[in-house]
Amino acid sequence: MKNGWIEKHEQQRISATLKAQFRRLDPSEARDLQTQASYRQTGLKQLAQLSRDSTLHRAITRDLFQSRLFLVGQNPLSAGERLEILLQLPQYRLPLGLLAEVAGVKTSTEMGNTLFHGALQVLAIHKDDVDRLSRHSLQQHSARPWGRT
Image 1: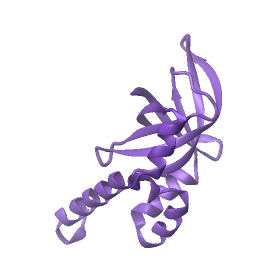
Image 2: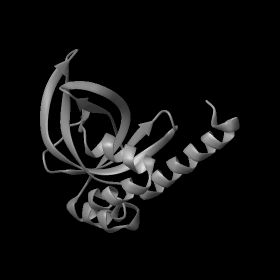
Image 3: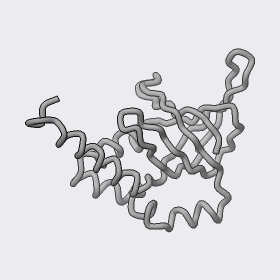
Image 4: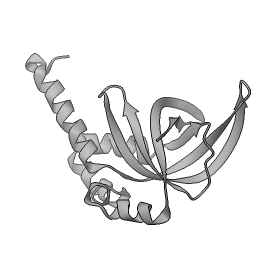
């Protein structure tokens, strides 16, 4: 696994930055992962329906599928390559796995280091991770008396 950062861009500015780990997938591995239940059930098409029934799915859909996301790091990226990414969500202390395709790459230099900025197209999120996040959220909410924060 390689390390990097996911930048969420909104209105031509960075609105959030999260730590991420990622690995490159060869084409056959990418196809295999997309057909596994953990990703097949939470692809772009399925999330539209799931978002109608779940506030967590709605938030994930809004944050991941309706924003411009970039993977930033020192590891070279290529347009068209598929990645499996573990996004670190600090509010949950749990990772969220996702499959993405690099749509385009730009480079920049910071403090003498070349950084690669890969524009991401999210293909699917890991269903088991979303289920864990949902359970964690419910546990946190039920631990508060009377639902107060």
